[in-house]
Each structure stands twice: as C-alpha cells, then as structure tokens.
Image 1 (tube, rainbow, N blue to C red):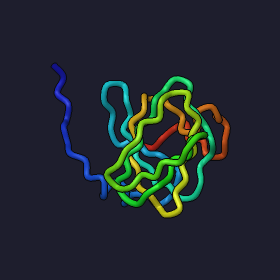
Image 2 (image 1 turned 180 degrees about the vertical axis):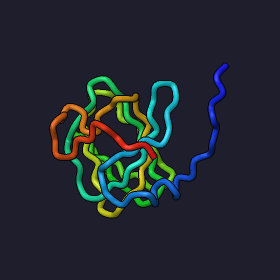
Image 3 (image 1 turned 45 degrees about the vertical axis):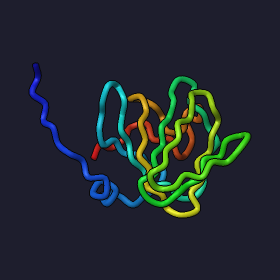
Length: 125
C-alpha cells in the first residue's frame, strides 16, 4: 500500500490565493475527478459538456445558472448538478466563490473548446 500524505484543505485560504474570475484551479483529486474552485463574476458563455456531468457548490456569494427553460439562483451552501449535454450559462451579478467536481480533463467551456475563456491547463493550488 502506498503512503500518501493526507492533509486538510482550507477553502478560504485557497480562494485567497487568486482574484481573477472564470479561471478554475484544481485543489484536489479523487476517483478520476478533479475538485476545482473558481471565482465567478459577470456572465459566462452558453455551453454544454457532451460526456461530463458538472457539480457546482456555492461557498460564498451567489450566482444564477441559466438553463434554456429556467434560471436557478444558487446561494451559499447550495449546489446543483448539470447533467451531461444540458446547455447552461452561469451568471454572477456579484462575486461568487464556487467549488466544482468534474471528471479530470473536463474543459471549462465544454463544446466551446477555443473560447477566450477556455482554460485547458489548470493550475493546482
């Protein structure tokens, strides 16, 4: 059995390490999934993920998840799972700190692989 170092993660500390928006960072990995954090502000782009479900958990602030048939407002402590193939657009009228679970290798802009907001090689914090 391998000996892995096991450490706790302080989300406030991790969020304090950056100030830009829509630029996810990897803060953990488990079972082929990345645990990511990002700060949201303003509108993102309409997109979908053909092969991955997405999990968004609001830590601080709030944002709206626009779907083609409704808008869901997420407040601190609330999460939503967007099934693969569902087009969505996050919009944050105030800064939101968000934790995400996604399969490793998931591109943040999904089907818009070459958007100005695409982040293919994420930093690890």
